Each structure stands twice: as C-alpha cells, then as structure tokens.
Amino acid sequence: MQTRRFDIKKLGIETKGKIFADLDIGSLVTHAVRKGEGELGRRGTLVIKTREDHPKYGRARYTGRSPQDRFIVDHPEIHDDIDWEVQDGKSKKPINLPIKPEVARQLYKQITKYLSAQPVLYLQNRLVCADRMYGFPLYFVTESPAYALFANNIFRDLPATTKDIPNKPIHVLFAPEFKIRDPQKYGLNSNGFAIIDSLNQIVFAGGLRYCGEAKKAVFALLNCLLPFMDVLPMHCGANKGEDGAVALFFGLSGTGKTSLSADPHRKLIGDDEHGWSRYGIFNFEGGCYAKLIRLDRVKERDIWSAVRKFGALAENVVVKDGDMDLEDASITENTRAAYPCKYIENVSFTGGGEHPKGIFFLTADATGVMPPISRLTREQAMYHFLSGYTSKLAGTEVGIKEPIATFSPCFGLPFMPLKLLTYAELLGKRLREHKTRVYLVNTGWTEGPFGKGHRINIVHSREMIAAAIRGELEHAQTERHEDLGLEMITSCSGIPDPIMLRPWKTWGNVAEYRDRSKELAAHFIKNFQQNFPDAPAEIAGAGPTLKI
Image (cartoon, rainbow, N blue to C red; front, side, top):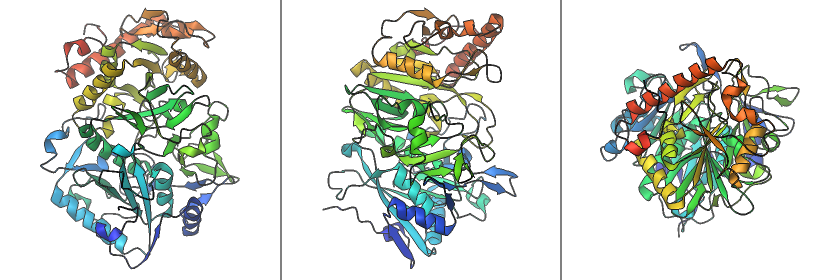
C-alpha cells in the first residue's frame, strides 16, 4: 500500500541536518519568525519581504514573476508538444524558454547539493487536483519555513494513503536563498531560475523569492500533463450556488478572479486554477493567492478577513503599528497573501462541482472601450478565449508600472506551454457537450481610459454576473457594438443606471471614444491574424469586422 511517507533521498538530497515534515501552521510560523524570515502581524498574519535590490541589475527584483528566468527542459519526447515560438505580445520575447536536459541536470545537482548542506529542511506532503482520478501527490522541499507555509496554504492536504491516486508524484525543490554564481555558463538570464521538467514531473528553483514562482511553475507543469488526460486546465476561479450551479471566472492577475469568485452568496471552489474533465470541474489547489493592494474592507470582506487569520502568509505588505497597511504600495503594487480556502467563510470543501452553467471572461480593459458585459456565441467565445485580451496591471511582473494592453491566449499564456490550439480545442469540445453560456466582462475602466476614467465598481460587476448565473441575461436586451461586434447587454437588474452598459455614453467625448474603439478593434484583428492564421473561418470571423 502506498502511503504519504516520502524519503527526500530519492531526490538526491543527502542531508545530515534536521528534516521537519508536515509541520502545522503554528509551528511553521514560529520557525519563520525565529529564523527572521518575517514578522507576525497583530492578527496572526506572517508578513515576509521577497524584494531584493540587486546591485548588478539596479532594480528591485522578486516582487512579481520573472518570466525570463523560467525554463522548460527540452526533452526529445516532448519537444514537438511545446510551443517554443510563442512570444509575449509586448516584449516580443519568447515565453517558453528551452533548456537542454544535460544543463538542467547540472543545475539540479547544484540545488540538491545546496539543500543537502542546510542544517534544517522542510518537507510538505501535499496534493494537487481535488479529483483523485486526476490527482498528483506533491512533495515540496525547501530550506525556508515561510515557503513551506506557502506550500501548506496553497496546495491541498495529502490523504493518509495514496492508493486511490493513480498518477506518479510531482516533486518541487524551492531554494529561495540559493544563487547561481555564473548564470551565463548555463544560458540563464540572471542568478535566479525556475526549471520545469514535465517528463520527470519535477520543478526546481533557486534564487527566486516571489512565492508565486512556485505556484505558477506547478500550474505550468499541470498544463503540460492534463490535456493528455482529456482535461482542460484553466486559469480561472470557480464557485457554485446552493443549487450546485457552477460559474467560472477566467482572467489574468488583477482582473478580479479572486474577488469575484469569493462571493459571499456562493460557495468558493477555488480562486485561480481548475480542470474541466468529462465529469465536471475541480480545483487544482487548496488555497487562495489574493492581491491585496487597496483591498476594500466592505466590497471584499471575505478576503479582508481571510488574510488576517493566523497562518495567512502576506508578501511585501508594509506593516504599521503591528497591522498591515494595504494602501501602501511603497514596496510593490503586487502585494499578495496566501491562505487556505477554508479561511473563506463560504467555501466548498470538496473542491469540485458539476459542469459550469456560466463562464465569465474577465478583462481589465485600460482603454475604457469594452462594454461592462457582453453575451458571446460559442464562436465568439472561442475567438475571445484565443485572444485573451486584458491589461497587465502594475506589479504583476517585473517592470510593469502602469496598465499595458496585452493579448494573452487562454487568459494565461505564460502558463500554457503546449500548442495553444490544444487548449482551445478542449474548450470547444466542452462547450459543445454542455452548451455552457459564456460572457465577456470588463472589470477595467469606464468613463474614459486609465488616467481619465475610473475602474468599474466591483459591486456592479457582481450584480451583472449574478443576473447571468440566474439566467436573466439569457434573453436580455442587447445592442451590437459597432466596432467590436459584441452583443452588449443593455439592461440588467441591480444596475442603477443602464447608461453605464453602453460605454460611449459615459465618455464626455463620443468622438474620442470612437477613435479609441476603432483602434482597439484593429488591435484585435491584427493580433488574431498574426497568431492564428489557420484558425477555422467561423472562429476567425467571430471577432471585430473593422477593415484595416
């Protein structure tokens, strides 16, 4: 019989120091404070600083993901499955950076040698994927109690026996204090790196202090594995009502996935990563990773409460008089907190649900052009899934200072290593099978672009989403957007002023709106033509029809 016991010697770690396996939250917090890794807030939150002002690079590092420090091991067996050509739309830099197996082995040996020399190591026996049929035991090894706490909070509890989990384990080695001395020798871009080995199901990282690196590296690994099990991996939040009706929320960081999925009137399934199998949907993780900057105590009270519970882990938050100041962005805009889903009052402990009734594509549109909510046909849903339009918000990646318009296919391009049509075809298959309704929701700006207008009130976004889930928008009045071709919902209960549903009516200058609108439509068309020239005609024709 398989059990949860795991010997780290199997990973090549030969340590003479202490190994603390599966310490509880209280013990991990105590170890982290004693080691000087963080300070304890008045209400029990462990606050750590991941920022590092690097003398060579001359900027603050490790307060957000560092995409150019993440590599995928280029094994011959998986080479043709990975999209090595795909680039970030803004920087034009490749997203899936290859590293040769022999180079990866050299770096792995350095990581295991470093960990073997540590006086204390922490092992967390965890699980990813709530559906046992698709689950993977996950063994997380680190020298840091704070990062062990992160793994404890984010990933699921591993059951006492793993006999009903058919898949081989995933191993994660995370060494935030390790620095490679000669990165150029290994083809690295800095002295920090994260390596994803999908063939051997190993993630190992050194010198990267931002907790999100570990979370997203595991997510990318699952996105390599699950499509071959007929599971669509999704960068989305999920919740369900008392009747079991499931809603999914797609979007990049800062678009509102965490806030909108944590609805006090619905049970939270998960805030960020899910799979959609032939049997329904399931959460990959057991925790939430919420953005904290300017979190509203009234509008986002569930998250506000959760991040102040004992054992929650906050990153780069300024502490004043013993309490967290969520208004202070002096360290970074990308302040974060990791906490177990059970810290949310209204949570689904099963981590799963039936096939979704409604899907919401969230876009934080910084141009102020996008309507607050639009109803999509299946073809439009495929078009906008492949387009993945949004704005990268400040702090979510190194160097992002203000919103930047971007197209991120699957609403998670940096985490989708396979050919993109692989994911799109799986989505199309599920939509056909279950006739799920899809909506495009703008959680970004209105009454003008960023800098002139203001962000759409999350209360209004919740009202529109609730109406859609209730079925009220199935046959609601719509008006076709002249440039984007979207069927805009023009009447919705809970919205006090229907004018806001027609975005050009909220601008002081309609001509300026039209100019911006045509410009955005042109961006959509150009992006789709460049990246998906072979897409089926019915999908390519479902986007804007503006002639350019």
